[in-house]
Image (cartoon, rainbow, N blue to C red; front, side):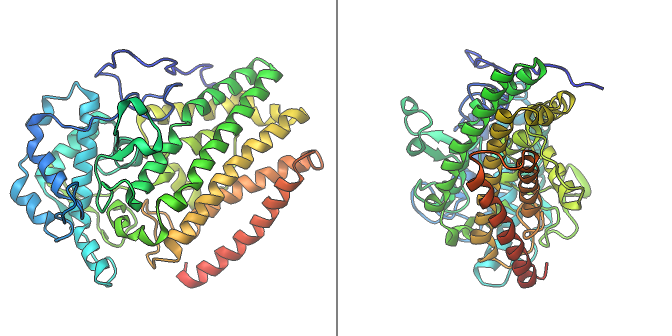
Length: 458
């Protein structure tokens, strides 16, 4: 069945914001960021939850050791946090508040379940087992707010850990990086100079460029459908230029979040699925006595690269690793998922790749857009190598994918597609240096995969 020719994108922000509009509705002004800045304060009825979260981080906002530093968070949850499910029900119609509650309850859930693992890791014993049951005063309200907000009842990248977890120091300064702070943190993240803060806020800083990416993708699709070569080329150029900005911001991760610090907070963003800490899943008391299992927080849940994959029709291999990639799709906000599926279907129906390759000028711009996806994925692989493979023996990533093989699955796909495009014209003018780099990285990647497979017994 053909995909609809249009998708209901917001081209202007609602003023005033409607409490019944999902915060993560794709828009041209904000792209994949929430329509307005996340609430930093919960309603007064959730005072016990706020108090718990303020005391939770290893270093609190006041600079003193918190509950996770003294390994007393779990006991404090059982002692101090009542079941606020009835209070949650009163705010069902206010979606920004429900999303903020989802963020905060998911932080509590992850800290509670993984606190014993972090204690063992600090003692050099490996992660061991997490807590296998989530108490009802966390599980019930978390399940409720997740259901209303359209998320899994576990920490996710957009709705919780990253894109709904920033605040502005000065509203007049807007989204400048120096003006961003975390709302919630596990380790030292309330200090803006910390590696935990840098890790999260660089992602926010990247996604603030997603509005032009969305617009470029729509322009490309519309122009292809209308056989408007000039606008099609402009759309591809906008996609490539925007991703170049995203990659420049991404490169700042090296300075803002140090590889040696990553494991100090990584424990708390692991999931349940495919993790040795939860061999049988987790029982959500008051929700289900059957153990439940969810993937952990992962930057792979961001929507920018999947948008590029779908628009440019990057051909992923038919492997179990690609099945994991497909599973990650369900860990995004609902409207993001719908938009990405629309882009995929529309690009297929109007044959974006074929249209790009029948004209040399378009093929060059298409290749440059692919190159920005390659650059992103290569840098992600380099992060994985330096932040994880060289510092940890744990075989799975936070989202439950095999740490050595998963990223190369997607990186290899975009490299192969670049080679096909270039060879279609027997080499595209001005792209020689770009393609030399592709072949060089292809060889280097294979060597590194073999090296780390041997070392990690993968």
